[in-house]
Length: 415
Ligand code: PMP
Image (tube, rainbow, N blue to C red; front, side):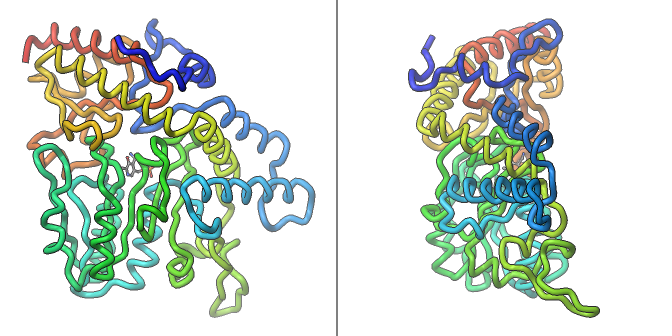
């Protein structure tokens, strides 16, 4: 059995995640649903509690000590997260509830303001619904047209057709950095370089990338980058949208309310500077501060160690699944082209049954279409079972998964 990376002391790491210490149904929890959401380390839980216990106040408006502290921590977290994703300027990072809200912000603001009849939005058939449906909504209201980059039999985008798909009507290319359904890692720089040649903007759904690898929005060459805090050890309801300053400045507000205005008259208002122009109402203050703690935590572990560890787990798990036989794994076969997500089917066993049987052994995986029905349609299936890894998983977890799947096989018979 391979050992995990020496640079990542998994036992010490795991001990920092209180939720992982529990038993489920009399079995130690084996948490393999990280693509849906990650567990949270103690430092993040402490940051949440510290805000509410010590500094609880609204940000930006109050001229009193608690409000000053809350504002300093809230804006400090913005600076931290901007740096974390390679943004040159923290004003370019807008706090959102997560990836979904970030994409909806761009669709509602930039999309509704800019798109017109016959304009084209180029998506991919690998996308999560949150990078499809907002564009459908905008297309139906503006007359814009959706086009798709298709994928091959391994779930990799077929970029050979990109020059034909990109036209002088293409206004936006919106693609995921890493697919949540298959783990496919998309070559964003290559796509962005081609998109730029026709003057299209590029939006990247980074929900599955920011938790697992060092992201540098400038190196990627994109214009918008969306991510979620809860998949990267941070709290639910936290996340962000990065966009270039000139773009954010040119875009109309997304929602109206307090915080986002400069001056309100009876019939009109003027807007606050970015990023506040896009942050109407009281924000998720505790969430942003704790997301800052999550970024510190991941920085401390280091993305080289995280990536190496996840790759070892992926390689070990794929090998064991292959040895077992009767398992159909979807996604790229080249480990350089995929992340720690394993989507699979097992003969006649429905993914929900697989998940239920594993749950009875304390093993948490996900079953369903993973909010990626176009991916399921591509493979002619309705659902897969999905195991997804994070920094605290181990080869022991993989062994438990394999034992669990062996019991599924016993119930359903060989595939
Ligand atoms: N895109 C991808 C690739 C995802 O995996 C997810 C979450 N499953 C989302 C978007 C949506 O993220 P959230 O629900 O955090 O807004």
